Image (cartoon, rainbow, N blue to C red; front, side):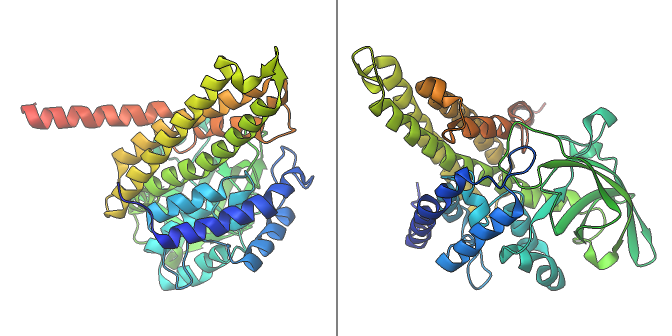
Length: 391
């Protein structure tokens, strides 16, 4: 397997030092919203420190280029050593995926107006795709999209409802997906906008993302035609460009968090004594930590393998599905073991272990539940069998 570059190793080392030395002390900062997510003033304070340290948006190069996916994997894992790390160094979702998409397909005008403030860490963004499930809207199946757009002179008019829109509250840049007669479309919009009304921000199991996961109403939103990505009907094509790297970057960041949770659990197991010896000397505890090491390494290798596939120029749809399943399930096992090793302390907010457990549980659903990815892979297996057997 190809090793990451010296460039990535150096960037990753600086990011890790910054997260461990500067970001981790902020984990107890009380500037949080109604469900425990960090407020924007905390985020921006950390970003100013990251800017001064030269580690802000480390996956985007000074000339506007992008690290390879394999290099990105290494750097984003280091940023994830704290739940606040991706926020601080600007590798968080959904901004990281949105930056990747706009960098790939945005016009020069779109890059200047919408991408630049994201890369500079001065704005957050939101990706408006998912819709309310109880209304039959799009979730894992984007073809169910109900939000509509229609041309009106040199503008498009968008109407619909969206749900679980991460970071919508407080975002300055929005990417809105809607369907036209030609098919799905993507639009860039400035936020806030009076035609996009936040209806509800629920309390959720996770609490790492500013702005939460809002339900919003889009009521006659008018968007200039030149703020559409590409042409009408190309929205799903652009979604595919964003999809696999975004799945994988989630794996990268949460791998870093589970590495840190494992470190905390290991420290606890070596310091805590019961029944005459350190917990780690009890076989049941020692074996859980050993299994963590195995899962961490397997997940890391799966991430690297998929990253290399993406670096060939492939969309990596099947490979990213495999990686998402394997990594999210492995990280769930790791987080669960860390809580178990630490017993009562593991379920308190005295460490980040309980938060990592909650975040990874949500990750098993975000960017496609495990079952959807397995179903997609099963369809691929069937197609290949039919092609080979003349079915």
